[in-house]
Length: 605
Image (cartoon, rainbow, N blue to C red; front, side):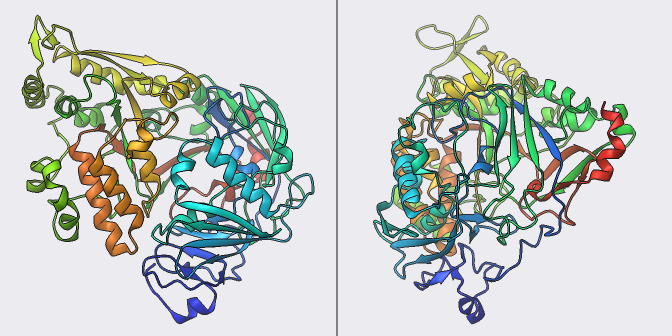
């Protein structure tokens, strides 16, 4: 991924920005990590089967309900599958890291100084009503999402200073400077919306009707909150493009909504749904002892992946007491007994997460040295002394369930923070007991939260567990109306602008942002900007490691776990390519095998 050759340039490939040598020229692909692997005339993605048959229906389960077809705003709960309604300027190849290929755009051009990017639209690009997609649609989409969309758009696109449409099929984005190395790719991911359809409609309100799109599927039928069916567009304008050959093979995709994951699994076993991604270890280990599985009608598949796994954790809302004190946060992390959970609840299926950038080269290890130390040195007085002296480690236990050492260490920290145990209650100087709520959006996580609540009670903490429906959980998360939640902070092969949305002061007070924790720290803000401005891999790696280390030593979360495989269960009605892409499941390249479907049809009646 890091080779450089005259041949690649001859093919019109631009490799961004790890050397800063990109030329201003038309190209078919952009990459942050070397040259894209596919030439301009590639026929299809290598992991897709261009001869995959079309047809059939696939049914998947969704949790909760929906009341909106607008996934771009905070208000409302968006329908499942809306991503297949719109085309992007460029699309990611899940077989490559941080690489995109033109799609809605026919070509892309990055200026030599990297201070602008231009997209030329494909001449065949059409909305489902037959109207041509124009540069004005792109410009309107950008302005609308930045003004009215979810807060992360303003962070992602914050370095864009202007948008120009010099021709009906050409749009140019200009940047404040050339330091934001990934901004051209971020803009390439934009889902373009139809300006003419939205004229006269309020973009800020939940949308109860299906909107006009341009993508491979459109809404065929729906019942708000219960079900939606997407039908493949027979005359989809991009069907023969290399980025689409062999993909989107199902005639219809239906989502059925269920109250929670337990009900959804029962529906799957009964044959009401066809495919599910399994992220519950108990289900994977013990749930597949039913007739259809024993008879071979239901299959399971594990696919190893090479994805960065980010951070899943119990996340503190540090806007609230008592979580404003880092000593309290560290103490509560010491109480969590992952080893007991992994042995008794997870069947040994998971690996403990010890970094916000786990399973990647960006995870901080050891003590800071070299370029990372140089980055951190100016902030030494503002950082914990231990950060420079010893590696960060997550607390570990012997798995027995007692965790006496962790409890003793936690109690010592809590006393230092002004908390004492009186009559088996942990109280502050005013005699108020420490109490907080762990908010969940699925009953399946109660088997993790309830043991944690019990371990906290051993210190005299009154922690409660409350499960709400996904829509209510989303509203409370968007409004930062919680004490502690289970949150996921995903990461990519090239961390950048999204870090502002996760950790910056600006986003700490912006409802709907991903800074659910409420982090506002000048050192972290400065490190984020070093990550965004890194112009080479050699500069990016130590900058991200420094950010990771500072996040870890502030104890903003109680780290949980991750898996390095995709676990899939499905009724045996599918055909699929010979291999999956390196960094994804590639389900959009599967197809219905009609012979298999007919064979098991009777089993599912």
